[in-house]
Image 1 (spheres, helix red, strand yellow):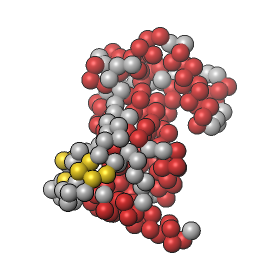
Image 2 (cartoon, one colour):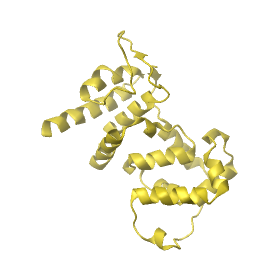
Image 3 (spheres, helix red, strand yellow):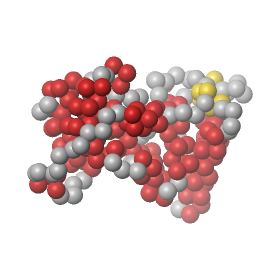
Image 4 (cartoon, one colour):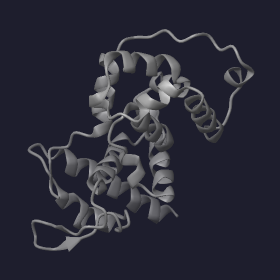
Length: 205
């Protein structure tokens, strides 16, 4: 699969979020909402909230394009964790937060295509403010989506399995970069930023 252009599903979600009805959320009323809790605890609370709300659970089973305006309004009003994530600067979101946002929003779940170690790298890049390299990670996650172990034949005639290929500077430059074809070279620049970060990281280790 050679990908034309460089738009990402997460960007599609951001656009849909901006167009969605603005819903005021109630002020925190429980102790769990008032204290600072870990990401794992937030995920657990969100899961319990969905389990206790059949309508919310039903909405989350639908792809974004099959949801009505009323569905979106109800989701934004009743999914507290999603509301917290949406309120943040998109460039500061961790892999876990994007994963939740994609799932709750009914969009392509690209974060599911990254391993635990790769998600940790993603969060490291976010913390470092290296937005270009973060976009490079997003491109690789997108490139892996739906591949299910299939081999990709590149323009130079070589082939590889992106789902089983480690994200290293060498693999990015020789393999992943060839999967993207765009007119302005934006994808190549983002992947080069990621490769460069990994090279510097290896030197400083």
